Image (tube, rainbow, N blue to C red; front, side, top):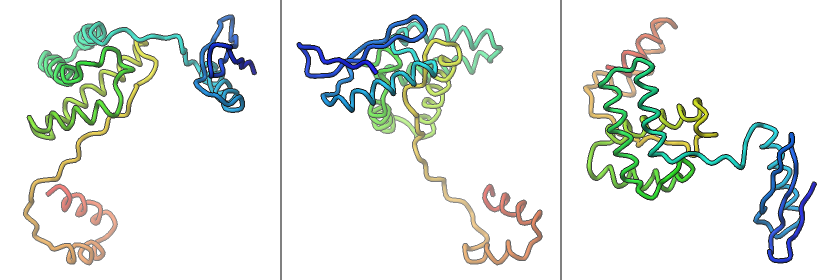
Length: 192
């Protein structure tokens, strides 16, 4: 464990070598015990393949590479166009986001609030699916180390459906059926 306190800083700093490469930086902690925990955590991350020196390229450079990848992998022109428009809609509303690491849950929530005033929840969910697919592909291609944020879809309420059985009638009806028929009937009742 190598944590040191610099004379010009209130924080402890870590400094270690792994496979011929030096890793150092501030722990942003004033307690030595917490700084040692942080340094041990950083060591584990580095051993697991995480590179704290990795800087992802700007998103404006990754999107054309992603579109090229879509074309090379036989995606339809309509799909490519929808993905381009969906990513453009998301990222234009996050003007302060320059690299993928800048995308945080707060930015996603603000995007959802702003976009829901303009279009339907289905459209917002579609655009978020394109963003999620883009970030996952960037990780697989090695352009990013990890997906920076978990993207949750907007919850939607289903439209009203015709119901021929009341809630109190469905349970006894399903109980009378055999197992294979119960599963089929349950599917039919859920999907209409």
